[in-house]
Image (cartoon, rainbow, N blue to C red):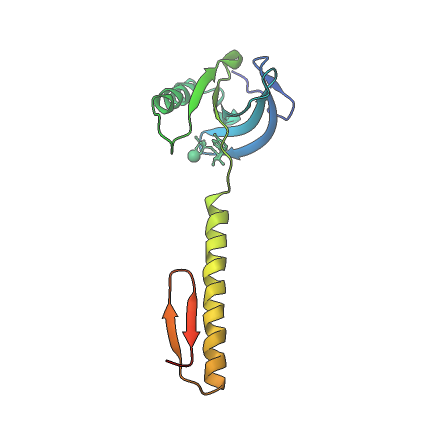
Amino acid sequence: MDSIALEAGLVVESRYCLDHWLGGGGMGVVWAATHVSTGQAVALKFLRPEYAAELGMHQRFLREARAAAAVRHPNVVAVREVLENDGFPAIMMDLLWGETLAKKLAQAVARVSAAGQVGCNRCSQLWRENLPLRAKFLPRRICSSNSD
Ligand SMILES: Nc1ncnc2c1ncn2[C@@H]1O[C@H](COP(=O)(O)OP(=O)(O)O)[C@@H](O)[C@H]1O
Ligand SMILES: [Mg+2]
C-alpha cells in the first residue's frame, strides 16, 4: 500500500485540512488540522510513511487508537475517531497546546541557576564588606541580612 504525501493544505477524508506538522514519534506523525466546515482544531496522527505497507503496523496503529479511545482521564488526550482515509488511517484526537518537556526543563534550570546567582552575589557582597551573613533559603527566594 502506498503512503500519501502529507503537507499543509491537504484535505483528509474531505473534512480535515492539514495546517502544520506537530511532531513525530516511533510509530506516527502528528499534524494540526482544521475541520473544513466547523473550523474545529484537531490533531491527526498518521502512521509513519515507512510503515504504510506493513499490515502488522496498521493493526497495531488501530489497536493503539482503540486502547486510547477507551481511556477517559484529564491527563490523557481524548481520541475521537479513526479516519479510514483510503487505507492510510489517521487517529483524530483533541489538539493539545503547550511546550515540550525539554523546553520546560531548560527554563527550570535557568531559574535555579538565576536564583543561585542572586545568592552568590549577596554572599560575595557581605564577604567583601566583612559582614556576618544570616541567610534563609525559602522555597521562592533567598533572604539574607547582616543583622540579627
Ligand atoms: N493530540 C496532540 N496534540 C498536539 N501535539 C501532539 C498530539 N499528539 C501528539 N502530538 C505531538 O506529536 C508527537 C508524536 O506523537 P506520539 O503520540 O508520541 O507518536 P508515537 O505514537 O509515534 O510515539 C508528540 O511528541 C507531540 O509533540
Ligand atoms: Mg511517542
